Picture 1 (cartoon, helix red, strand yellow):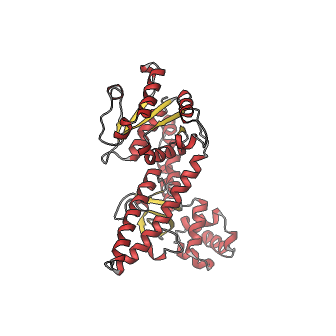
Picture 2 (picture 1 turned 135 degrees about the horizontal axis):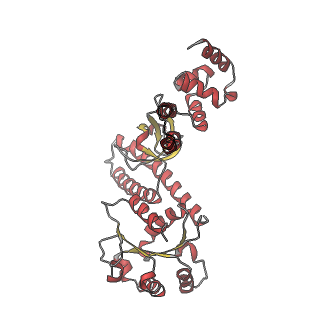
Picture 3 (picture 1 turned 180 degrees about the vertical axis):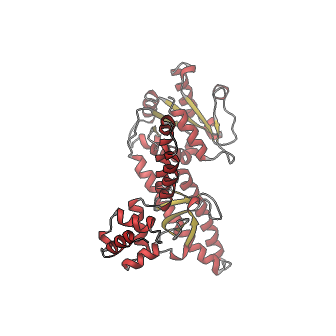
Length: 350
């Protein structure tokens, strides 16, 4: 540390923690390369408070490294056109700061893949995050250190719904074993942890369903989601994710109120739809109402102009008319995230 840095360091250390601004914290954490524990000791606070302020200010050491590399590269480039093209690096520099936020996360790889938790803090090397699977207060013993590259804030409604169902089954099985006296102490502790995760995932899922029910769309295209009553669960999940992505989705569960005419409401929904999404299944093919929906929409738009997207959610074979159009077969080899990407790409071309 040179004299100038020492002088600034001494000045910052005299401040109260509440008075530390973004430049002060950047100097300590990035320029002096102090770890969070060292900064916490200076101000006699917890490391969590340091992490929170770093997150609020968007300060990460990786940003400085990437910025320096790009600036050094650009300084050696004399071609202005090339500089202009390369100057789009801003988004790359910003991404390490914003790619992961504190709060609900899903584990995308590793031994905990698919689990839902709360990301609360980093280790001192900013490589791993502390994740609680459940309420942080009641599940302190279930805190795990997981690589940040294995965490994501992008939790689709499908992942939440699937995890809730999986946890419900696991909890039911564990309770049955406990009732028979065959549950070990280790499994008993795991049961508490799984229940905490179940409550968290269920709360997040309910929050999504409540919010999307009243969420206004960001564009004018209206999507009619046609499904059988047996596939309502998947329809609700897909409709929620599409609505979160900004699309105006017509779903019978949302649109038809108590006392309203069901045929009339469906007819109005089809009349105002810019596109029809079909969730094709064996139950769908058996339903007379579902057949009337897609055939009526098909005939209305004179066949070739009908904007129909078929998603097959089991091993059903689509009718000849629908099979003549490119469809998406959703199965274990094709992820739900892939389905969303393909669906958004198609809807954006409407």
